[in-house]
Length: 107
Image (cartoon, rainbow, N blue to C red):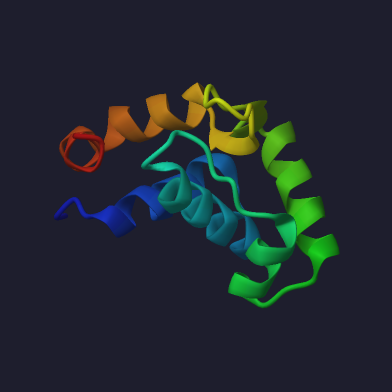
């Protein structure tokens, strides 16, 4: 099977038993955090992008935290902005399964 960007998300669905909303949130956080290490989008923005309620986003982010796949933190920028990032657990799993794709993305 050819390794692609999409492969990463299908593998995480199986490995971490992710719901459809958790997969979408993980993909958004991944994409929005690539440049600065954190996703700074509001929960309201995330809800609008995937067409669900704020409560659904809040509950699914909580589930992702419980699974150890995301964490909230403060960026190292001059403003100390609060954001969300994928955890080392997520990165290690993806890199172990899809090293070539992972390395292309994080160059």
